[in-house]
Image 1: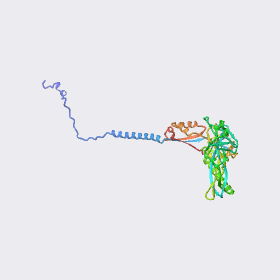
Image 2: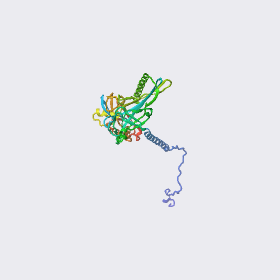
Image 3: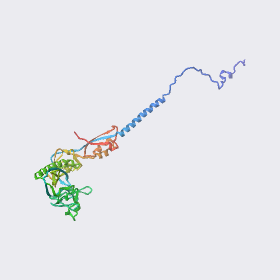
Image 4: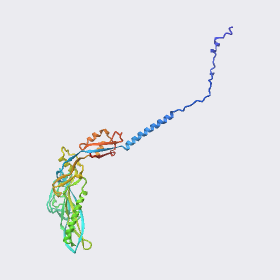
Length: 415
């Protein structure tokens, strides 16, 4: 019976299982669905997005660099002046309002009937400009003062003339005072005719003024001794009248075109002189008459004139640089008809004084500065500037361009 009784170590729980034995798992035949990973597609869209952002940033930077700019409109300070305004001007004045003279010459010819010949003896004449680089004081030259050419020939003035004093410049040097007048050869003859020449004043020899006073001419003509075509007195008088009328109109018409930039003529001061008529044989029984007219007029620097008006008419004017808003509207007349000595001027027409400023200085002040500092920068240019406006592009740009060439400055007009 004991043999039939199972031992504890023979229990099924105690039967050892070989190490290499595993229960088989049933295999079922079925097709599984496989989803491809989405990781690569998501990364591609990420790169595309980053690329678009980068291009946008680079494009914005490029646009900001290439197309950056600023437009500044400046409204200068102005003051309306009641007219008329009376002023005094002196030749080459050291202080106050000064004027200088401008010379313009024109020539013309005409043909007249001639009959036979006649003997003539005529002295050459022309216009000289006398220079005073000796001192700031004026110098009077008496009637018949001599002027000597390099070849020793003598020419004289037939009227007394006062040469203005020199003007002392900021560096201490002297700008010569000048005046133009007529001279006549000491003797008749063609040998006194000459082109551009510089003259000395023999009367100043042995004096420091000898080297500091001199005269210059563009031409001296009309000298002749000999036989020339005979012209009837009536024909000569008529031709001379026609020549002088035509030359006067020609000189007057050319004054404005010959004015130096920034100057204005003093109306009524144009003095015209006519050289002696010269004659030469023409074709057939004719003679050719030639004549030269020289006009001398007083001119003023517009900025000097504007400052003189401002000093007289504007309270608390501090000597700032000023000009005229519309110089063409300005009319100036003088109490005298010759550009000599003291001139009593009368200004009329609508006069508006306009303060001046330097556009380049404004550009330099704005370069690279924040737009928020615009008002403070413009304020540093007062009292010349009343107000200003600025528009910078692109609109998101916080600063003015770093290149002054990309900043434009214009003058605005208030309506």
